[in-house]
Length: 184
Image (tube, rainbow, N blue to C red; front, side):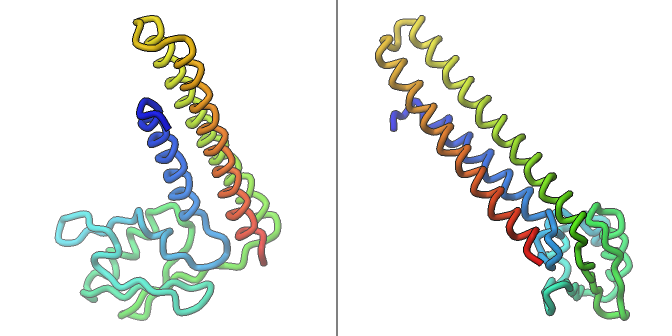
């Protein structure tokens, strides 16, 4: 790989990482503690990540258990969960908060797969935009005399190969997530 294409590959890698991060927040009927990653709890006036104020565990396939280090935080944690977009009402016994994930209907699973594909399409557009930026950059370098026509062609071929590679990785990620969602 040419060092002039490395920066564009890094950007493509970030697009893939971002997509995979989004996929962790899509629930597939199983309890996944990563859906709580974006939740912040008001801890003495400071918004803190939920994982830093409580122990988060998955005692059963469809339940997340949250045990705050400080019992006085139960109400704050419940409020943060209710204000989030995870769509699950928390229940507590005074010491522990439980999130029980309902079994997904076939219809809901299909909706989630559509959502996964939509997010993947966004990532593919991002990768293609990076390819376009790379090619524009190579054309400018060619016009400025920094690249010969042959070098420009070689770099554009390398970027196309990278684009194909990342589009394929995105497709694989979609396949894995879709299979996870559709598995009952």
